[in-house]
Image 1 (cartoon, rainbow, N blue to C red):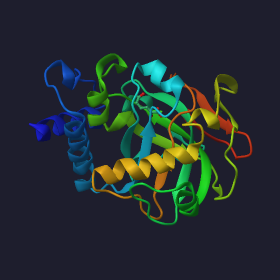
Image 2: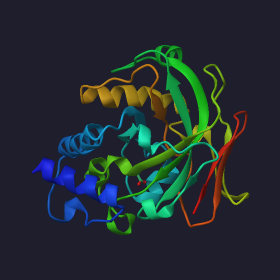
Image 3: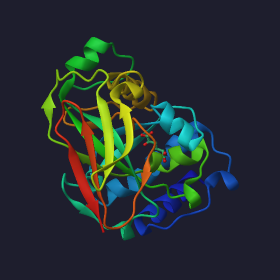
Length: 252
Ligand code: OOG
C-alpha cells in the first residue's frame, strides 16, 4: 500500500500534475509518511538521480502560519533538483511553484543523531544563501502533515549562491526575497529556529531517527525564513542575505 502511494507521488511530480491529498482516503502515521517519501525518492534514485542532501521545513513561524502546520519536517534533495545560480526554469515543469529564502550548509564531516553546537559547527564546510523552489503535488497546495512528508516536503528545486567560509557568522542577518528587484518578503536568519545552525542540528537528529546520516559533501537547506511567494512566468527571483553573496533565477 505504501509503495502504491509512493508511485502515485512520484508520477505526480514527474508529470507536474496535482493529485488529491492522500489523507482524503488513507490515514498515514508520520512514520509511514516518511516511508512513502523514502520509497518515492528511491524511484528517482533508481532512475539515476543522486541524493545530494536534505532540507528542513517549517523551521520558521512565518511558514508554519502560512501552511497551518506546526511541526518540523525534513525531505531529500537530489542532483536534478539543482537550479544553477542565474539559471532559468520553465513553469510547465511544476504544478504551482513557490520560492522561499533560505540558508544552505555544505558539510565536510558526517553528522548523525544528537550533536552539540560545536560538533555541528565543526562539520560545516561552507555556507551560502539559497532559494528553495517548493511545489506541492497536492491540489490547491493544501495538505496534512503526513501528506506533505510523503510528498518529500514539497521539495522540487533549489538555487545555492556562492559559498562562504564555514565560520561566516549567521546571527540575525536580514534576508530579503525579491521579485523583479522588488522586495516581496523580508525576514532574518534568526527566524530560522533562532539560528540556522539549529536547523543543521535538527537535520542530524531527524535523519538519524530513520537510520540515515548527513554525509560530507552533502547540502542541508535550513528552511525558509519567510512565507513562500507564488511564481509566475517571466520573473526574476533573487535572495539577498546581509554578508553573503546573493543568488537568483528566472522563470519562463
Ligand atoms: C512545505 C515545505 C516547507 C520550509 O522551508 O518551511 C518548507 C510547504 O510549505 O509546502 O520548505
